[in-house]
Image 1 (cartoon, rainbow, N blue to C red):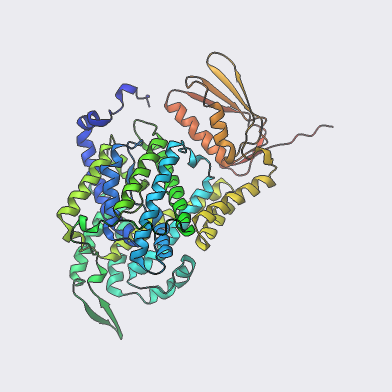
Image 2 (spheres, one colour):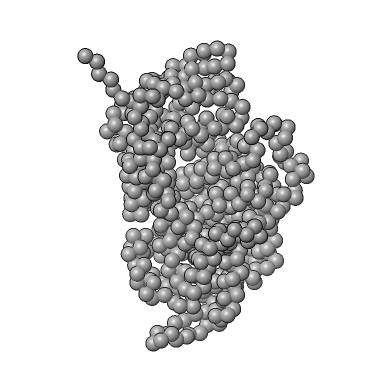
Length: 544
């Protein structure tokens, strides 16, 4: 593919709007159709009012969309933060969900300020530090938690257990105790989400599956008469259904605005969640931004630090008016790219359509059954924790499976920060057992030699691992971009998978921008699996 010249890139600002408003309006509208049911479901699963998710998406579109450093990513609430938000509401409220909601809003405000500071101090490379197996383990654990908490809602059952492991153990009882009519809506909704991607008809593939779920579930709600409180019998068992199985909204968006309560902001538990919000939200956003840059037809490189500052300001606003925390969300961002978005105005239009729809047709939203929204979240949770993730980790190396499983189990048993820390600890232990020196944990030893006016040789003379990659990038950042870099690993005792993956991605980025990176010196390194980016160790040669 020919490289796209600078003058061919889509313009930004008002000029970009004038040039590409048609494609951006279409993309924004299709993303709005996906976002509407997801925002409602995420908010309710998080212990927030339904419109809190819509508020966040509106702020993420109409405000953050104007200042973002990532032109194609969609900002809004994310399923990956459900467990954190709900945990904050329950912990800070101590049984009072309304109080916990207001206290959590104050946590969101402070975490947003922390994200702004991270952007100011250029922490946009944060995602490069963490081993991929740890990140995948964190996301898989979040997916399992979402499934465990939303499956009872999908089947119309109120569970006894609260924590994820206990909820997983209660699943057989939940299935036996399901409410048939509610479960019917939930199961049909889940079936639609599973089947639609396999229908290879162009027209069908352009229809967002969550929108189909919302419309079909509204129809089923009318057929099953969810709008009136009543009981029905099936065999010898009596079941109840009624309007409390539907989405409930206030009379207007203005009526849903709630202000934060800062009375517990100095509580250690509040600061625990402030750090988790800022850390996980920033990490998920940065990973999404990287992924969307790979999908961008124009191969633009986002300004991660500017994006962090914009998202942080968005979270401050959301926390002040009753919204969920926001991130750059991967599902909606991918849909944005796939539907032809050219500039950040697509994100703005998605927020505008949400505002107009909620303001103009709130009664339609209140006809959506909760079990349908729960089915959407169960499906989202499955995608985060799909078995193919474990298979991919296994293909990279058996040690990656240990890191992945440790992160998942500890996260389910404790919380996200402890889970991620445990995964990193296991990674460090594996590296130590493979002979990595502690002095090389956060430092990397390089020799940089100009070979010609065009080429620069970089000799890596120490272990190359996840924890010193940022040090490596900083050391070579002063080399002019038009140089061909030759990276020699012949003197590196150990090269881990994280370093290999980052180097491979960087090599691709340089190739797209007209630069060149050549890798050599791995002939005497033994990989720990057949995966091309597997960790590897240099063979020792003995001489008589």
